[in-house]
Image (cartoon, rainbow, N blue to C red):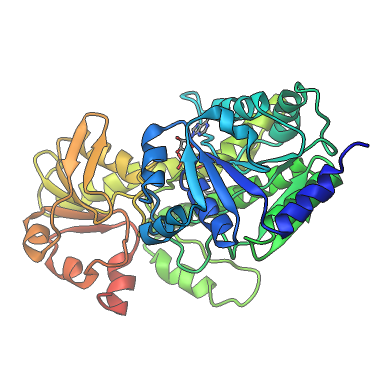
Length: 435
Ligand SMILES: NC(=O)c1ccc[n+]([C@@H]2O[C@H](COP(=O)([O-])OP(=O)(O)OC[C@H]3O[C@@H](n4cnc5c(N)ncnc54)[C@H](O)[C@@H]3O)[C@@H](O)[C@H]2O)c1
């Protein structure tokens, strides 16, 4: 008699006997490992980067959202271990893949990490494994790319092994919503795949949201991030419109936000950054180009958002001009280089463009960021300088790019000779007081 793998996996999930494999122990994979361990599962992390494997095995976290004390506890209890040994991928009952999905130089999806992770899993696939992709990707990746690779084993999806897509929604630095209490969407290739995944995630995630297919789950994630990109683009365009009309955009936004229905507040800024908002919509645009359809909202939002660094550099030029100064030779203090407040991630940060443009104009740039002690992008290598009244006073112009919460904005506002505040931080945060 053939084994009923669905029932076996569900029983293993309920008894916490299932071994959870996580491929890629980064911003997404490590928090998931911690939640699975918290739920009582043993977790085997697999990562191709030796440094990541070593630090995790020492119980040292390289991801801010997972405090080292928490990780160390799980490692000590034997609940989390990490390996670079691919052959061990046959051990876990569930394998969640959370590897990078960047864009290539030509801004096409770079699916090579998902492909190589899938091939590694496929080489060791055994009956009774449940595979789930968490990386953000274009619709069709799970079915068209992963399924054939896994079925090469001769095993059948939905009976011998299970396959689903479940997008990660982690918001690094968010104090309210983490992996456990952020609802999780799951779409299996077959209904049995969805049922197995629901059972496996259920002990670790408070709310699970099954959808009818991996494509629906893949598109859910892309809609969420495209929605953000488009609305941030609208807020940024509104900032430019208000500037030209001589109206305070922040007052307009606060005014609109008093409407209790039909409006959602988005704020302008230096542009968009991080691994998600600037990249994910391009996955959808690329897929649709292949179907001869142009996703116009995505293009326009990308255009507006990517022009914001240049807009703000124009504001620096203007602020210096008002003091009869040029950017060339001016001392410019950039505050915040991470792509958003209170995180240590600089990927795709608009600060990188702003600093590059200011340097190109001959500015003498220094920066302060409590989360990024060293900055190295292209030819520019800098060290974070201490932020005190003397440093602020010494700058010809201060540029706030990222409004980390624990900075003294009242002091910055008071001491700076010229200020370009892309986040409206001095007005909003200084009012709340130094936190
Ligand atoms: N960071 C976020 O805020 C966030 C939020 C939601 C979704 N996502 C998505 O999650 C995915 C992962 O992003 P991340 O930020 O965790 O990336 P990351 O770079 O922090 O971590 C990825 C890890 O995968 C490892 N890796 C790469 N190729 C591998 C392979 N073939 N086998 C095993 N390990 C491999 C890397 O060494 C690294 O440790 C991406 O698709 C991203 O779009 C990220």
